[in-house]
Image 1 (cartoon, rainbow, N blue to C red):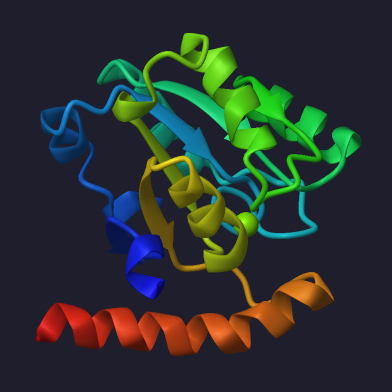
Image 2: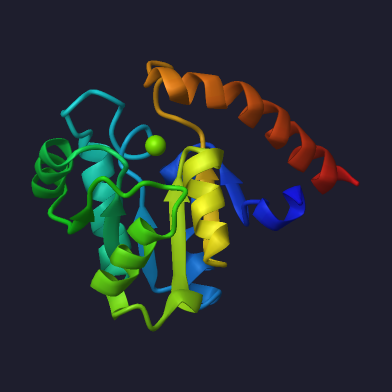
Length: 169
Ligand SMILES: [Mg+2]
């Protein structure tokens, strides 16, 4: 069961993602989580490094949409700061938020060219894998998190250990 949800890539942060390699794989669209992937949870300040990374991705030809379980107000502010469209109250790991983002990016027609980037196994990875999207799991930016997320992290750690072991074998 766990194999079905195995992330396609595990990176320390967005900066470690080899965007050229994604292009080679035929990926042209990115659906990116906000909290603890691009911006620290509960904070509004956007690191200039994130902006440069997004610019570099756009220059390579990636079209990007944000997708967040957070509420409208926060997502709208981040959308504006990053200059990207977004989906709020996405209810990940349900499919609906990812489907909305896919529709914004390519009218839902090119999911085979789409990668999801997120920091949480139970929302980002499971949700994206349910739609058979390419998934990149990154490490969370900060320890401070929503209390339910903290509970999920305990299980997440065990699952990641399993995947690491699977890679070694
Ligand atoms: Mg997140």
